[in-house]
Image (cartoon, rainbow, N blue to C red):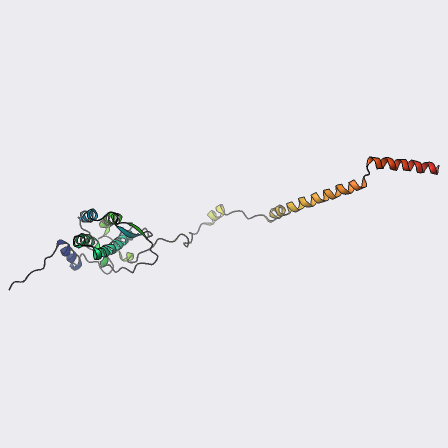
Length: 237
Protein backbone atom coordinates (compact mmCIF):
# COMPACT_ATOMS: atom_id res chain seq x y z
CA UNK A 1 0.00 0.00 0.00
CA UNK A 2 1.41 3.35 -1.05
CA UNK A 3 0.70 6.40 1.11
CA UNK A 4 1.09 9.78 -0.56
CA UNK A 5 2.72 12.33 1.68
CA UNK A 6 1.37 15.87 1.45
CA UNK A 7 3.53 18.41 -0.35
CA UNK A 8 4.79 20.92 2.20
CA UNK A 9 5.94 24.28 0.93
CA UNK A 10 8.76 26.10 2.77
CA UNK A 11 6.30 28.78 3.83
CA UNK A 12 3.90 26.22 5.30
CA UNK A 13 6.75 24.48 7.11
CA UNK A 14 7.95 27.74 8.64
CA UNK A 15 4.44 28.62 9.77
CA UNK A 16 3.96 25.23 11.41
CA UNK A 17 7.33 25.54 13.12
CA UNK A 18 6.29 28.93 14.46
CA UNK A 19 3.01 27.55 15.80
CA UNK A 20 4.35 24.31 17.30
CA UNK A 21 7.70 25.32 18.74
CA UNK A 22 7.35 26.31 22.43
CA UNK A 23 10.30 28.65 22.16
CA UNK A 24 8.79 30.57 19.26
CA UNK A 25 5.26 30.75 20.62
CA UNK A 26 4.38 33.86 22.51
CA UNK A 27 3.80 33.20 26.17
CA UNK A 28 0.55 34.28 27.83
CA UNK A 29 2.31 37.48 28.88
CA UNK A 30 3.49 38.06 25.27
CA UNK A 31 7.21 37.42 25.40
CA UNK A 32 9.48 35.36 23.14
CA UNK A 33 12.45 33.28 24.22
CA UNK A 34 13.55 32.77 20.59
CA UNK A 35 13.25 35.35 17.84
CA UNK A 36 10.32 34.70 15.48
CA UNK A 37 11.73 37.26 13.02
CA UNK A 38 13.69 35.62 10.23
CA UNK A 39 16.90 36.95 8.72
CA UNK A 40 15.38 37.06 5.22
CA UNK A 41 12.25 39.11 5.82
CA UNK A 42 13.54 41.99 3.69
CA UNK A 43 13.90 39.72 0.66
CA UNK A 44 10.44 38.25 1.23
CA UNK A 45 8.82 41.67 1.46
CA UNK A 46 10.74 42.94 -1.57
CA UNK A 47 9.46 40.05 -3.71
CA UNK A 48 5.86 40.95 -2.89
CA UNK A 49 6.52 44.63 -3.41
CA UNK A 50 7.99 44.00 -6.87
CA UNK A 51 5.01 41.88 -7.90
CA UNK A 52 2.23 44.14 -6.62
CA UNK A 53 0.94 47.30 -8.21
CA UNK A 54 2.70 50.02 -6.27
CA UNK A 55 -0.40 52.21 -6.13
CA UNK A 56 -2.74 49.53 -4.81
CA UNK A 57 -4.79 51.34 -2.12
CA UNK A 58 -4.66 50.23 1.50
CA UNK A 59 -5.26 52.01 4.79
CA UNK A 60 -2.95 52.68 7.71
CA UNK A 61 -3.60 54.12 11.16
CA UNK A 62 -2.72 57.80 11.25
CA UNK A 63 -2.98 58.33 15.01
CA UNK A 64 -1.27 55.37 16.67
CA UNK A 65 0.46 56.33 19.89
CA UNK A 66 4.17 56.88 19.33
CA UNK A 67 5.55 54.27 21.71
CA UNK A 68 9.15 53.07 21.47
CA UNK A 69 8.40 49.54 22.67
CA UNK A 70 4.84 48.89 21.55
CA UNK A 71 4.73 51.05 18.40
CA UNK A 72 6.45 48.56 16.06
CA UNK A 73 4.32 45.72 17.44
CA UNK A 74 1.11 47.69 16.84
CA UNK A 75 2.08 48.55 13.25
CA UNK A 76 2.76 44.88 12.54
CA UNK A 77 -0.62 43.87 14.00
CA UNK A 78 -2.38 46.16 11.51
CA UNK A 79 -0.14 45.05 8.62
CA UNK A 80 -0.88 41.38 9.36
CA UNK A 81 -4.60 42.10 9.15
CA UNK A 82 -4.07 43.55 5.69
CA UNK A 83 -2.13 40.47 4.56
CA UNK A 84 -5.14 38.34 5.53
CA UNK A 85 -7.53 40.57 3.59
CA UNK A 86 -5.37 40.57 0.47
CA UNK A 87 -4.96 36.80 0.54
CA UNK A 88 -8.74 36.41 0.39
CA UNK A 89 -8.97 38.20 -2.98
CA UNK A 90 -5.60 37.37 -4.57
CA UNK A 91 -4.77 34.83 -7.24
CA UNK A 92 -2.71 31.72 -6.62
CA UNK A 93 0.70 33.24 -7.35
CA UNK A 94 -0.10 36.37 -5.37
CA UNK A 95 -1.36 34.27 -2.48
CA UNK A 96 1.98 32.51 -2.13
CA UNK A 97 3.83 35.83 -1.94
CA UNK A 98 1.31 37.23 0.54
CA UNK A 99 1.54 34.07 2.63
CA UNK A 100 5.32 34.42 2.76
CA UNK A 101 5.06 37.98 4.09
CA UNK A 102 2.26 36.98 6.44
CA UNK A 103 4.48 34.24 7.86
CA UNK A 104 7.14 36.82 8.69
CA UNK A 105 4.72 38.82 10.85
CA UNK A 106 2.32 36.08 11.96
CA UNK A 107 3.95 35.96 15.40
CA UNK A 108 1.94 39.04 16.44
CA UNK A 109 -1.22 36.90 16.42
CA UNK A 110 0.24 34.67 19.12
CA UNK A 111 -0.36 37.38 21.71
CA UNK A 112 -3.88 38.02 22.98
CA UNK A 113 -4.46 41.51 21.58
CA UNK A 114 -7.60 43.41 22.50
CA UNK A 115 -10.02 44.48 19.73
CA UNK A 116 -8.99 47.59 17.86
CA UNK A 117 -10.01 50.78 19.69
CA UNK A 118 -12.66 52.96 18.14
CA UNK A 119 -10.41 56.02 18.37
CA UNK A 120 -8.13 54.78 15.57
CA UNK A 121 -8.29 56.98 12.48
CA UNK A 122 -7.32 55.35 9.18
CA UNK A 123 -6.04 57.10 6.07
CA UNK A 124 -5.52 55.71 2.58
CA UNK A 125 -2.02 55.03 1.26
CA UNK A 126 -0.28 52.78 -1.27
CA UNK A 127 0.64 49.14 -0.65
CA UNK A 128 4.30 50.04 -1.26
CA UNK A 129 4.22 52.36 1.77
CA UNK A 130 2.62 49.64 3.91
CA UNK A 131 5.27 47.08 2.93
CA UNK A 132 8.10 49.54 3.48
CA UNK A 133 6.71 50.39 6.91
CA UNK A 134 6.36 46.68 7.73
CA UNK A 135 10.02 46.12 6.89
CA UNK A 136 11.08 49.11 9.00
CA UNK A 137 9.03 47.93 11.99
CA UNK A 138 10.60 44.46 11.82
CA UNK A 139 14.04 46.06 11.77
CA UNK A 140 13.16 48.16 14.83
CA UNK A 141 11.62 45.21 16.69
CA UNK A 142 14.20 42.50 15.98
CA UNK A 143 16.86 43.56 18.58
CA UNK A 144 14.23 43.62 21.35
CA UNK A 145 11.91 40.75 20.50
CA UNK A 146 13.61 38.34 22.95
CA UNK A 147 14.63 40.95 25.52
CA UNK A 148 11.34 42.64 26.29
CA UNK A 149 7.97 41.59 27.59
CA UNK A 150 5.17 42.92 25.40
CA UNK A 151 2.31 42.20 27.79
CA UNK A 152 1.76 45.96 28.14
CA UNK A 153 1.23 46.28 24.39
CA UNK A 154 -1.86 44.12 24.04
CA UNK A 155 -4.15 47.11 23.58
CA UNK A 156 -3.47 49.53 20.77
CA UNK A 157 -3.35 53.13 21.94
CA UNK A 158 -4.35 56.26 20.04
CA UNK A 159 -2.59 59.57 20.23
CA UNK A 160 -4.31 61.90 22.71
CA UNK A 161 -6.70 64.37 21.17
CA UNK A 162 -5.24 67.85 21.59
CA UNK A 163 -8.73 69.39 21.84
CA UNK A 164 -9.66 67.29 24.89
CA UNK A 165 -6.32 66.65 26.55
CA UNK A 166 -5.86 68.85 29.64
CA UNK A 167 -2.74 70.97 29.72
CA UNK A 168 -0.06 69.91 32.19
CA UNK A 169 -0.07 71.93 35.43
CA UNK A 170 2.35 74.81 35.58
CA UNK A 171 4.30 76.05 38.52
CA UNK A 172 3.08 79.12 40.44
CA UNK A 173 6.15 81.01 39.21
CA UNK A 174 5.28 80.22 35.60
CA UNK A 175 1.70 81.25 36.17
CA UNK A 176 2.89 84.47 37.77
CA UNK A 177 5.15 85.18 34.81
CA UNK A 178 2.55 84.52 32.12
CA UNK A 179 -0.65 85.79 33.78
CA UNK A 180 -2.09 89.00 32.39
CA UNK A 181 -2.44 91.86 34.89
CA UNK A 182 -5.96 92.43 36.12
CA UNK A 183 -7.52 95.63 34.77
CA UNK A 184 -7.67 98.43 37.33
CA UNK A 185 -11.21 99.49 38.15
CA UNK A 186 -10.63 103.29 38.47
CA UNK A 187 -8.75 103.43 35.18
CA UNK A 188 -11.42 101.42 33.41
CA UNK A 189 -14.14 103.67 34.85
CA UNK A 190 -12.23 106.78 33.74
CA UNK A 191 -11.94 105.46 30.21
CA UNK A 192 -15.66 104.78 30.11
CA UNK A 193 -16.66 108.20 31.50
CA UNK A 194 -14.20 110.28 29.47
CA UNK A 195 -16.43 110.54 26.33
CA UNK A 196 -19.43 111.50 28.50
CA UNK A 197 -17.39 114.16 30.30
CA UNK A 198 -16.18 115.65 27.03
CA UNK A 199 -19.75 115.76 25.72
CA UNK A 200 -20.99 117.54 28.87
CA UNK A 201 -18.13 120.03 28.76
CA UNK A 202 -18.90 120.79 25.11
CA UNK A 203 -22.60 121.29 25.87
CA UNK A 204 -21.80 123.56 28.84
CA UNK A 205 -19.45 125.69 26.76
CA UNK A 206 -22.07 126.09 24.01
CA UNK A 207 -24.70 127.10 26.56
CA UNK A 208 -22.35 129.58 28.18
CA UNK A 209 -21.46 131.11 24.82
CA UNK A 210 -25.12 131.51 23.91
CA UNK A 211 -25.98 133.20 27.22
CA UNK A 212 -23.08 135.56 26.86
CA UNK A 213 -24.19 136.38 23.36
CA UNK A 214 -27.72 137.16 24.60
CA UNK A 215 -26.47 139.43 27.37
CA UNK A 216 -23.92 141.38 25.29
CA UNK A 217 -25.63 144.02 23.00
CA UNK A 218 -24.38 144.81 19.55
CA UNK A 219 -22.49 148.11 18.99
CA UNK A 220 -25.54 149.86 17.51
CA UNK A 221 -27.61 148.84 20.47
CA UNK A 222 -24.89 150.22 22.81
CA UNK A 223 -24.94 153.63 20.98
CA UNK A 224 -28.73 153.79 21.16
CA UNK A 225 -28.65 153.00 24.84
CA UNK A 226 -26.05 155.70 25.49
CA UNK A 227 -28.03 158.33 23.50
CA UNK A 228 -31.16 157.38 25.35
CA UNK A 229 -29.39 157.76 28.70
CA UNK A 230 -28.12 161.23 27.67
CA UNK A 231 -31.53 162.32 26.53
CA UNK A 232 -33.05 161.15 29.74
CA UNK A 233 -30.44 163.02 31.67
CA UNK A 234 -31.17 166.23 29.73
CA UNK A 235 -34.80 166.02 30.47
CA UNK A 236 -34.12 165.55 34.12
CA UNK A 237 -31.81 168.58 34.13
